[in-house]
Length: 204
Image (tube, rainbow, N blue to C red; front, side):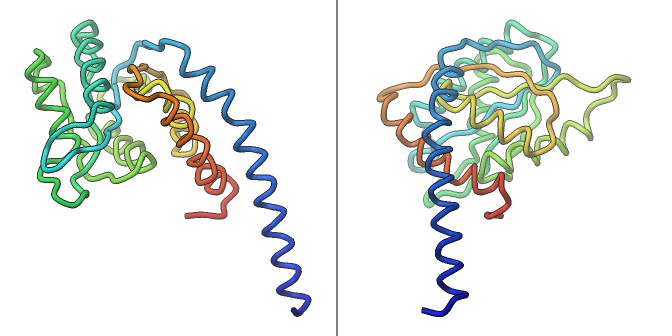
């Protein structure tokens, strides 16, 4: 093994070890945020999408987010909703954003209060694409107040992603984590690696 290869492997091993420790340290923050019930006031509420089953059936996770969004928006009549999520899974026929919007309107949220962000495939893209839509829509003199809505277990990671996407200040609205919550927290541990790698610039 030449010195260059050996040195590269040592560097990668060191990064992996650091990321592993960081991921473990990350989980208490995930749990702490999940235990809080956020309901921050905002001008724009980004409703982060979730899994779609088959052609257009929302997963239990997305159903909880939609129910929480409808309740929030009906109690905050001046907030504009931005349902997020594209149509990118095999067999899917409606975008996540469209499915969320249809649910909101069925629950009494006016169509004119809804702006679709229906092109994204990741949480990073949710925030990036939504920012463009807000900049195009906002006519106020001050900066708009923005918040995102997601499942409780996802709040901490989504907040970090928002900051990485240029949101200096962002509010939060928590939705219930459905079903087997433990399974979702285990997933968060492993997804932490991807977030940490992006943060240190090792993954695009």
